[in-house]
Image 1 (cartoon, rainbow, N blue to C red):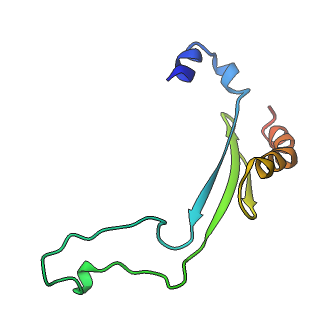
Image 2 (cartoon, rainbow, N blue to C red; image 1 turned 90 degrees about the vertical axis):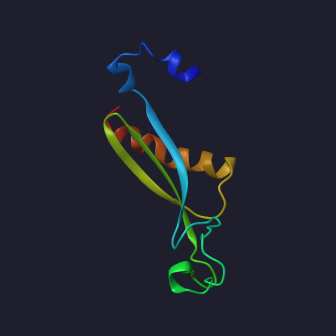
Length: 104
């Protein structure tokens, strides 16, 4: 809320100078959380009361991307675990070209 309040009066030209970036994990199959099913007693194995699974896990991918008011830019596949060193490396390798692509 403080960020929104601080930038409430920023002009459209100001926002065209902002580059947003973030990373996300995408599950290849299903979701990485527990799901529940409501059912009546004695109907646990009824097919309408079961949830399909993928044996041995479905895996996931980590992605980093950036965008501005001018549109999206690079999407980078992250290998291994994301930590501060990996994040700084992604920025070092991609940020300048993102800025150039978006003509910022």
